Length: 253
Image 1 (cartoon, one colour):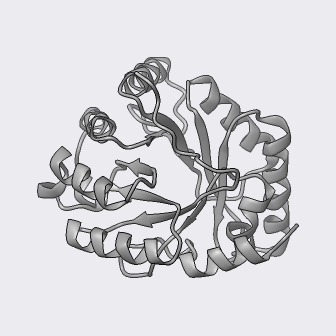
Image 2: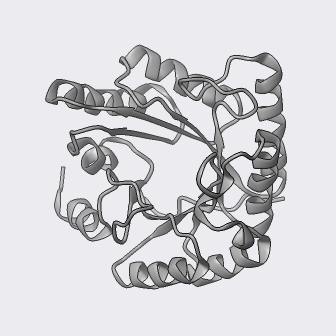
């Protein structure tokens, strides 16, 4: 099966993340985001209440996106609290079957690890088999590792290369930057990934410093994650679509 295309232009797409409990809220945000220039969407399906986590709903939401590509996650937590990783894997496959272009596979799926990149060989084999199945359904795969701490460049590159080796089409690593020195280093690491990885990547940081999230797309990130609005479910560190469109379109370097 031919893979669906997520990256459709020559610039990192403004990708609006949806963390909502009901399809009605997702649809409202999709429509409002399209009016503001959204170029792709991210559906965090674990946020949907259990009764809405099905192919019928997913296809309905994809139709509302008007041809914009969709990146989807099916993480632990929220409505997925208590589900086994095997069940999460089936949920990822359901998203691929529904027409999602880019599916997120956690780097520690099947064997939890504090840096979200498992080392267990049996778990790695199961991840690679899952990635093959997702590819067979026409979707691309992003592998994610949320480290939740500042990490030196050497470790970031090590994780990125390992994700790539497992078959991921896109590498995603999330660290932290709690002071200006760490933030400047994260900007440097972004450029380093661009020079050395040889694959699309998304390198983000949380913490108290916000410049990295706003400039990452100019330095090599393959997309820009943002939100239409903030509420109790959204990720506070993700900037508004309206902000990021201005930054992307007006900051020329």
